[in-house]
Image (cartoon, rainbow, N blue to C red; front, side):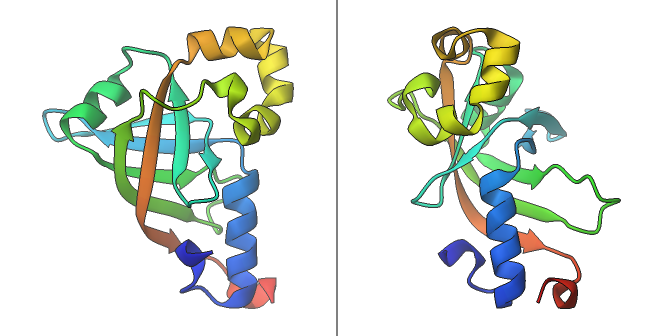
Length: 149
């Protein structure tokens, strides 16, 4: 994976696993007044190393990205902050993206949660019908590399 090629091999495998397996990330966009706005999102790291996020139409994050494409995506941290993975990049609205229920990787990753929280995949896709595609430009990672080797 080119995105993680600058990391030592043990850390690289760990970070790639988190990018593919973590369920929650914090998407930070920029408001018109310059203040950051962070919200939790479900996401999919795609084979081309872009990140796909679905949203309900009309949400602030979509308006923010339309005005300023610079974003940050931080993986949810559950271990007192020692395993940080954060992407910086640009996002764009993707009106031609497949609906969430027809995006195989996304549908598989969130199938259990979609069923428990929203009913059917089609119901989820109807609610979260606006897609964002993030193109990472930088990956920041911290943690104990020696513990992973």
